[in-house]
Image (cartoon, rainbow, N blue to C red):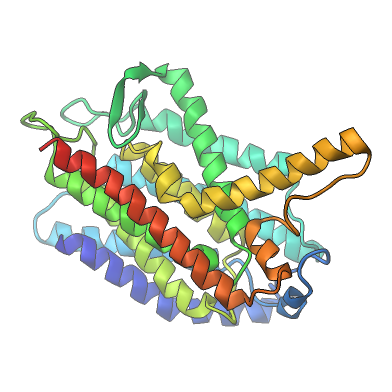
Length: 363
């Protein structure tokens, strides 16, 4: 438990102390956020606020993980494991895609960066590479970081995807989750606060799996998850990094995470779900992000359908994603953020309850 706490604390301190340096540097370089002209008009005053703050989150997560392993090594423990490194690879890889997207926005002074095809291609390359590596790299027990079985709170033995099916599913989960966090990152602190709660859930899940392994002795209710302690270190580091960043990202934000942060955080959530064998449980844990994504899908789908049927497109919401609907309805941004945090916390609590019910039920 101590290494997990150490990872979270050092990531928190690194994030909260180094983010102001990132703010100063980006301001000097003119790395300011461009704002959509068709969005809520109250957002226009945020134009020029430093963006790409996700580099602080990603960097702090890596620092927390590394320092925890240094302390483990000093005490005679082992070094980093494949699962933890794969999760960080996914986070850094998608963060790099987001960084390029943010940089294009800044250079071209517009609110749109990479074209959709280019962004999906970047996600495809990183996601497929992660999935292929996750099916290899066996440990001394012959376990691989990921499984070709579909998982809920553990592998569903009756549903086998095969290697190709797993790679496709992994990409879909990674792409969907990273884009869901990206859609949610529309108000100061909203995505960072909600993501921190999800990573807290994964840290606890990984720790419970670490305390109940199937190797070297198989027993009822054990978890066939490789490197669960390493995954707990990554999740705890991300938790601390998000909380530290939130100090500077809370309204009124002094820096935005940008696509650099949102794609990285979403990718890490997906990676943790795949590596902890809780793929379907991610829908519950990330219920807030799922709801925001569904609102955008409904808005786009209904508008296109009604335009085809009547010639005039109609909308379900005043504006999508969902938080902008409430803004245009007259809610104060801080009210929306806090209430969405509450919804996110309830979703994580529900997901943890599902996991713990299975944990208790299997002894």
